[in-house]
Length: 81
Image 1: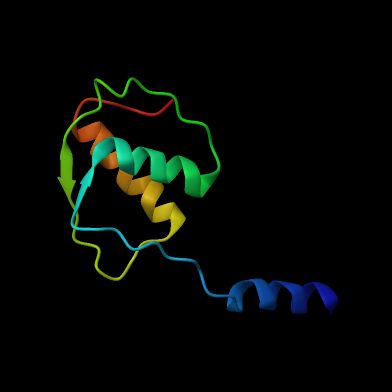
Image 2: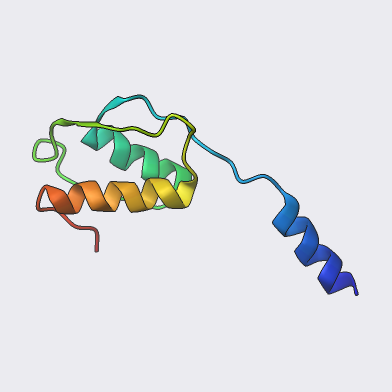
């Protein structure tokens, strides 16, 4: 029964969301994903340039930030490995 109660508590906790501005530099988004997910991401800042327009007014979860970052990188010919 303790396991069921612990699982219930984990589900009922609110998922942290991060507010993103409409315009964000792609490198800043990569840095944000790295910080939120606590992973080290190495990249050449001089090659990762430009801004992206986002439409996420309600905020995004860490998983959504990672997914969004990877989609945007892929659309510009980059990938995470």
